[in-house]
Length: 146
Image 1 (cartoon, rainbow, N blue to C red):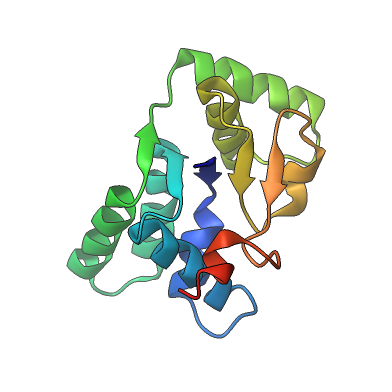
Image 2 (image 1 turned 60 degrees about the vertical axis):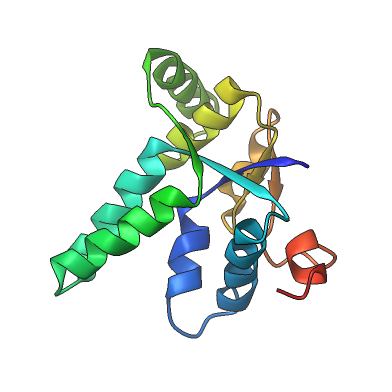
């Protein structure tokens, strides 16, 4: 089974309103729950998702329960000195890359994960990674009919 580092936007689109990525991202999460694919992430994904929810939510407890749910769906990798160094190197080489995306990419590189599951095209320019679009036709999560 392929290893995928999952970007925060997969969870954001899955929980959000009507959007072309909503159904594919929900399919990703259902497929992961069914064991069709394994999701891995930086602990920074959890921080980023919590930040977004708590900024938008009126119910802190509900938001934190959703954060715990997201945390349970991924194998989490630490944000340590090596990931920081790799992330900073990626920021130097890729001017369009944001800090949080650099941490996700740096985590993938350090963990030996070559596939990043994201709707964000900013990862396309990072030669160490191959971005897999959640809505890509023929994807196992779409083909599984989840």
